[in-house]
Structures are given as C-alpha cells and as structure tokens.
Amino acid sequence: MSGPLSGVRVLDLTTVVMGPFATQILAELGADVIKVEPHDGDNMRHAAPMKNAGMGYMFLNLNRGKRGIVLDLKKPEGREALMRLVPAADVLIYNVRPQAMARLGLSYEEVRAVNPRIVYVGAYGYSQRGPYAARAAYDDLIQGASGIPWLAAQRGGEAPNYAPVNLADRLTGLHAVYAVTAALFHRERGGLGQAIEVPMFEAVAHFVLGDHSAGLTYDPPLGGPAYARLLARRPYATRDGYLCVLVYNDKQWRSFFEAIGRPELMGEERFSTQANRARHVKDVYAFLSELLKTRTSAEWMALLERADIPYSKMNSISDVFRDPHLEASGFFRAEDHPTEGSLRAMRTPTEWSQSRAAAPRPAPRLGEHSAEVLREAGYSDARIAELARNGVTLLAPQAVKSG
Image (cartoon, rainbow, N blue to C red; front, side, top):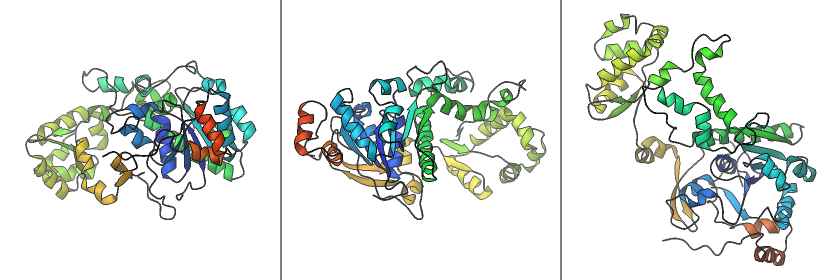
C-alpha cells in the first residue's frame, strides 16, 4: 500500500452512499479498508446499470480500493469474527443508528474493551442529543429538513425540489473523512482512541445556513433568511445555448461594460458598487439575462476571455466525461476490473508531492476477500469453510470477466 494513510486499517460497516463515499476516499488515500457486508450485499450493488448482478455502477464508484468480506453479524460467530479483526484496526466506521450497533454487541464500550486505541465513528441521521436521535434518515429527508427544497421554491415560484445529487450523503461523508483523519492525528500526538458522531442533519444545516442564515444571523433578526444572489443566479441563455457567467467585482464590471461598448453603465446606481449590485441583484441579473441572448455562446466566450471575465460552458454530464481539462489533469483513469471489464474511474481530486497513493484496487465482488481477511484474523481454511457452510460468511467464486 502507498499514500498518506498507508498502514491505517479501517473496518467499514457502512452501506449505501454516505459511509461508502467516506471510506472510499480513505482507501484512495492508502488506508486498508475492509468492507463488511451482509449476505445480500450493500444496497448499491443493485443500482443499475450493471454488467453482472450485484455489481451496479454506483457500487463500483463508491467502493473502489476496498477489500470485501461477508459476515452475518447477527450470528454469534459473525460478531466473533468481527471482534477478532478489531485489535488490528485503527478505525471502525458505521452508518446505522447507535441503538442497532448496541443490539449487535458492537457498541463503543464493547469495541473499546478489545481495542482502546480504536477510532469509532458513527455517521447517521441526527445528533444523539436531540429529539430526532432515533429517526431513520436518508438524503431526501435531510435535504428537506435542512431547507434545500424550500430554497429551490424561492427561486421564482417553482415547486420545492431536491438538489439532483446525493448532496446530504456526500457532504456528510466528507465530514466523516476529516473526523477520521483528525482523530488519528490526535491519537498519534499522544491522545487516545475515541467515539465520534457525524450527524447528517447537523452537517447539512451547517452547510446551508452558512450561506442562507442572512438576517437570522442576528438576535434580534435584521431580516429574513436566504442569500439573494444565490437565489437569483442561473445559467444564461445565449442565442444558441447556455453559458455560466459571473461578473462579480468592480474591476470585472468595468471591464465587462468596456467590452460591450457601454462604459457609461458603470455610473448607474444599480451597477456602481458591490453593495448597490447586491441590493439590486434581481435587476442586475435580469439585465445580464437579456443581454446574453443577443450573441452566440462562442461570441460571448471570446469576448469574456478578452475581458478576463469568469465564465464556463454549461456542460451536460456527458460533456463532463469529455472535458479537456479533466482529461489533461488525469482526473479519469482506465480501470480493468476482474469481472466488469474496462471501466472509466475517477481518482480522488487531491495531489500529494510526497505521499501520492497508487491506483486503488477495483471494487470487490461480494465476499471476494472473505477468506483472505479471515486468515489474517487467525482462522484456518477448514474453519473458514465451516463458517461458509453455516451461513456466517460467503466466499466469492472464481472471477470470470464479463465480455
């Protein structure tokens, strides 16, 4: 293994998106992540499209770099096997509610008794200090509770709507990554292992309110919520498509008006200062919206480039896969999966001058590393075979690559 987290072992009891996204990043930074699954596998194994059953595209993208083991943790032998992995682990991360971990005999107190240095991370819906503690949570619900659909409706009479990405899951996953790495740093500086809570609602509320608390920041309030510019902004229609443009500070506005041959507009009250533009943001953006319709996207891009005004094409998802910058920066890499064939994989978007991680292993088949991991825990091949016969573990068959 290589990378800044080389030598760190993570027991990954997470499923779906939030937890696997976090542990994939840890794996891509060099940690040895052991993904523990039930016999029917992580739900994301079944999200189409896929070439082979149980190897859906989202699972492939969320579990790259991990070793996979199947354990039925509801059986005593399954719990025992997991506990035999705990002494060599640095981190245990899960995303069910703490009450479920306690029912499995895997509470922090029970795990810490086996390994006092363990970093025990729970990533789930709500802080255990509030009245929602026992509620189940998913991305949709947390987006709603955090005000994201409400904000979508404030953009001009639209119906409330979710952001069309797993925003709450992935944002909370990033909080889990820094929680793990900070806890490991604390431990290496002479501290102890500890239990850490990473709640989705608090993580996303922290994210949303940072932009949209507005007048409610003050006590008593100085007005209502929401950052008006963020509600007003949209891609601009051009004569033949759409373009993303941000004319922001005084220098840019002055340069923009000169480029379009209207330098006198800088003298108008609505454009004259940052504060005035903020007060008249709807009017300012409406002006730009009408203006950009008068030329093609190519004509505007040439003008904006000369004027040094920030802009971007509005890409489709297919365009993103063909983006020349991402191609040049090495964001995509070819992966040859042992059963799924040729894949286009993404790398973790950080660069390291001294400890860059090697390309991670492909996402595991269900039970692919069960025998390997159990041997490391001290089980004999005969005992592993017995555990498989008794439904405690599952051993993946020989890999056969899909055509």
